[in-house]
Length: 81
Image (cartoon, rainbow, N blue to C red):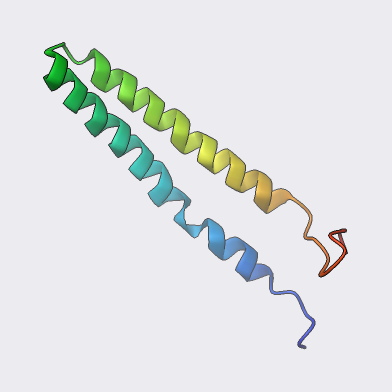
């Protein structure tokens, strides 16, 4: 029982992916709005910030899903069990 792997622990790390994506988009959007006000431009920088936020959020999700699909490593030697 003590040596059994707990697969739910692997998946628990990824429960925050939605929050990460939402925060990345909001930070990009708010940063773009601030830059638009600072430079006195139209909403172009807000759109650019939104796109950068989406890209950052999806990159984070992609990396997390790659980690999720990777085979689990052994305890000491780093090789899959």
